[in-house]
Image 1 (cartoon, rainbow, N blue to C red):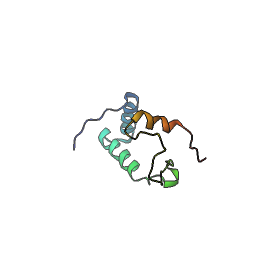
Image 2 (cartoon, one colour):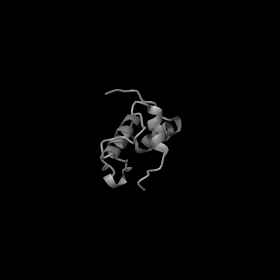
Image 3 (cartoon, one colour):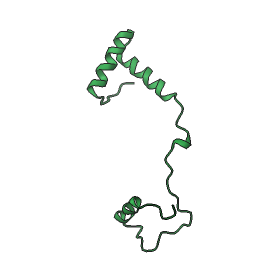
Image 4 (cartoon, rainbow, N blue to C red):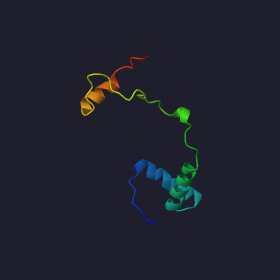
Length: 82
């Protein structure tokens, strides 16, 4: 399949040189690199960022859930439970 990708110029030049040294086409080099990257296991859940979860099902009094700006401000506040 043919496709068009935007690749950083320096990165592309490095890939071209490596493909040439290996005696393969750039397309094959990129395909093999992508295949190697995709077979790596995904990070363990312990590596994921812990997000706060509201288990009470209710917002703090005075918080308007339809106001994006209020909700974004809450993200910057420290967790009062900690």
